Image (cartoon, rainbow, N blue to C red; front, side, top):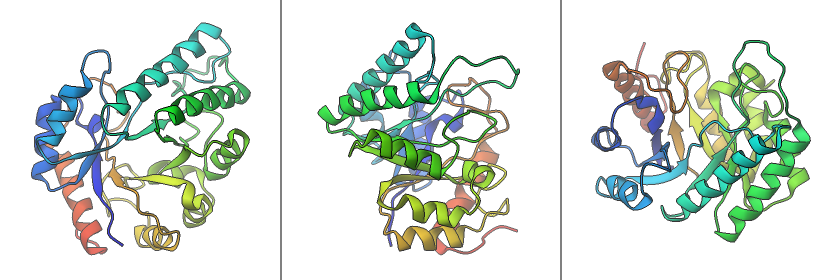
Length: 271
C-alpha cells in the first residue's frame, strides 16, 4: 500500500522554515508535520513556503500547553491556543491538529491537573474543530513526559468518552516502544481511528539504528488498511518542539535518508 511520507519540522531546531522546506523537498519527501509560532507566521506565507516546494502539510504540532490543568486560566489558555491552531490549520488546507498532554519536567514537583479536565478540554476543542471540518489527532506520550494518556488503551478510552467523529489517534513508535505491551496489537487496536503514524527507532534515531521491528508494524498498518501519512521524527536527546537548539544537520539527514530508503524497500539499508 502506497502511503505519503513526511518529516516533522521541529526536529531541525533553529533552522529557518524556508531552508527546512528546501531540505525536505530535496530529499524527496511528500510533506511535513509543521511546527510553527502561529503568532509570528501568517498561514498564507507558511502555505506558500511548502506549496512552492510541492510539499503537503499533513498535520500541525502544538506548543506545550496544559489542557488538564486545575488552574482555570492555565487550562483556558490551552483551550484558546488549540482553537487558534484550528483556525490556523483551516487556512492551510485542513491538516490534522496533533494534541497531547502537557510535557512536564522531571523535577518531582506536584502537578495540578486531572484526566477529567483533560477530557473536558479535548471535548471542547473537538467540537470547535468539527465546525471547521478539522480532525484532531491525540498522541499518547511516554511516562517520562506526561501522566494520563500513555498508550493505545488510554487514548481509545478517552476517545470513547468524548465520542467525537473528528477526534482520531496519532501513534509514535518511539513512545509506543516504551509504553505498549505489544506494539503490533496497539496498531491493530487503534484501527480506523489511526490518522498519523510517526516513526523513529527505539533510540529516536532512524529506522535500523535501534531494535524496533518495523516490518511487523507495517504488516499491521496494512492489515488495518491505514492510508494516512508516515511522519519521520528522528531527534536529538532532550529535544522538544520549539526548543531553540543547534542540530547536527548531516547526522539528521543521514537518519532521514536511511529511514526513507527503508520505507521504499522495506529492508535494512544500514548496519
